[in-house]
Length: 247
Image (cartoon, rainbow, N blue to C red; front, side, top):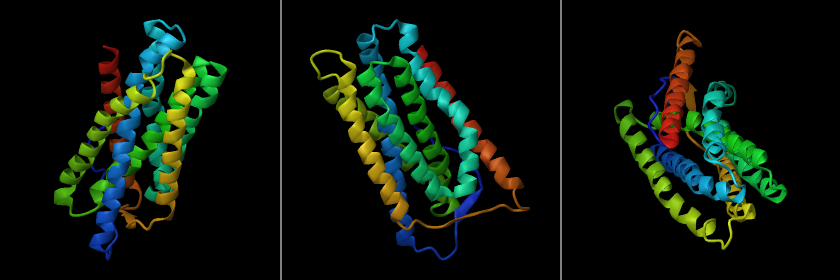
């Protein structure tokens, strides 16, 4: 799911950070936008695939979208609190590992042929993406002058859109390319995605990103407002996308 979140006003790059360091951080964050765009759009490939594999009706098949975007509604307010507690960089690492865990759940789901476990995997996967969005959007906005924050978010969103363009092509080749619609066809592709996400988490764990300082002016009042704004943005995006998917 793409989109430019409003800058919550709760963070800014600490003084004295080199420009080159900010540029590298922006490139790294842009890769995150690509990742979650790529993963999110794979749902559109999986729904008809799982529908045939598990012999589902339309309502049962659309539970994939319900569980996926329902995670945004449930997890986003807690994600904001998590970022406030552990910081943006650690929040990104947690988001990547959570998303990878959701991808890994597809392996036992297919082996046991359990559709409810698939749905739980979608929920965990989307929870990780929610954490990434809550952490990445204000971080990108803070990486540079405030007047160019919208431009940076639009550029990152372009990478997200590229991910949504590439995702169906890769997904169709890896998943829909099988002869029969068997749930096991998703095991390999999602294990590969999980591996990439874990590798990305290790990279973000060890690289030196610019330090963001919380502008908790008058202490935490302003930060609380920022978290609420970010939560409502994520909630609005997920709700509108779910409505469009179900129509």
